[in-house]
Image (cartoon, rainbow, N blue to C red):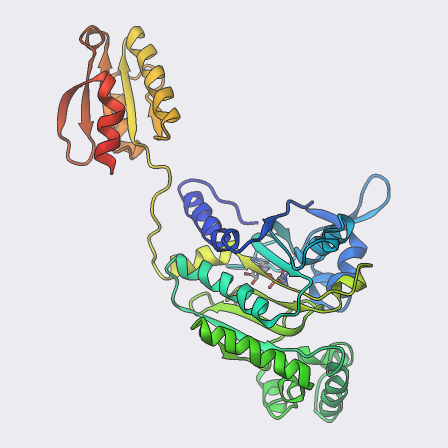
Length: 410
Ligand code: HAM
């Protein structure tokens, strides 16, 4: 499982916030949802034949003998909650975002963890292709705001209930004539599109002339896809048409996309999503379409590191206070409280470690400034202020400390 402790945890937070920020600026409202749900929700929502459901779920019985599962993804839970709270009975589309840990019992490797962190959005109740472009643009903006460049957006349309069944039959007929092993033959029966995504050269060679969904879209899916692309063009968001893109979840219809980063090796997907026409009705709600994404915070952090992007430090201390003597300590405690109230990060040298030890701690703290106050300074109402970078020291009056440091930090 991925876990983040200092100093790396700062960059983790920065990445997570960068991915959330464009969401907040687009009218999405926050949903805090449970990390476990009824197992049946994922079986019905994500699809029994997917690897996620058939092999990767953390499923167990609770004390009441109910089968529950740690959420492997967020969309099914958001739709469940939307139905449960009748959010879809108000203004449409319902626009929600969420963030937190997700759980998949995959074989761990770099960038693939059993507990990982995602930021997701779902926009439910509109088929407007401009909404598809908005969802993609928000993800794009999140990656770009971190300074990432070496990533790609793959885009396709998976058709809908009108055109996909006929295409599926066509693809199955094509696959039936190939020389495939039993397992792949079985996959062709259950989920033929996944065979197009097989990474083995022998299969790649055989499916290179396979019929593609994108060439068999019905008129309305084709128009919808053309409109999505035209909005992305207006937004100048580069994309690659990827007719063989297959995502690991069964609910996708029409627009489907994935962001991948070039320097992450095998686990290159930093985010992905798409439209899902039938999901809400499958889960017992109205027949509304939706679209959303899930962005991987862990992998985005790895991408930031791979591109050697230096993220700005977080909450760097403005001041480190060293007090010598009991009265001075009381003043130090008060100064710290005043700085914090003014929104300036501050820390104090705790414990009895003497001036030398305390100054060492001041150095290590990364603070912009430090002060040393002794009991004698208190009568004068002054302290020794040190600029930790230049080493320059000066005597200043205590009651101008906040304004002086504020002005210098500008
Ligand atoms: P997903 O592509 O399965 O989509 O997951 C979203 C992102 O989570 C992936 O692109 C990847 O960056 C990250 N991720 C997935 N599994 C792992 C793992 N084992 N370790 C580290 N990172 C991982 C969904 O979950 C859909 N619910 C997205 C969506 C929302 N589609 C429509 N709405």
